[in-house]
Length: 110
Image (cartoon, rainbow, N blue to C red):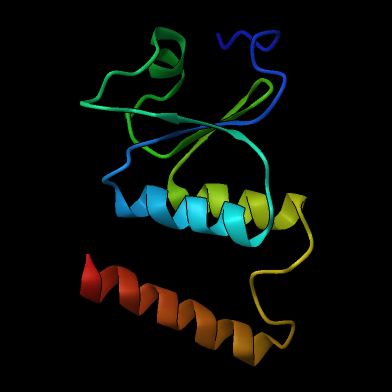
């Protein structure tokens, strides 16, 4: 169980070499989100975080008692929790095009 008293603020556990962590941190910058950033070096996770994330994957977000992992899930959470500026266009067709572009980046670059 995550100790929520110790984590009053959001904390992102991030591998400095991970491209999925990079895009999570880019979104944080674009949306002006303040959070603690804890770099995970050589897979050395805090014990309570490792126990809460069954995949041991980064990035991992802890927001009070909630634990999220996977950059897409974290980014969607940030976009829904912090409404301005929105990450996606308002128009459904433009949103679909943006999602297709992101999908192609995931498939073609990684």
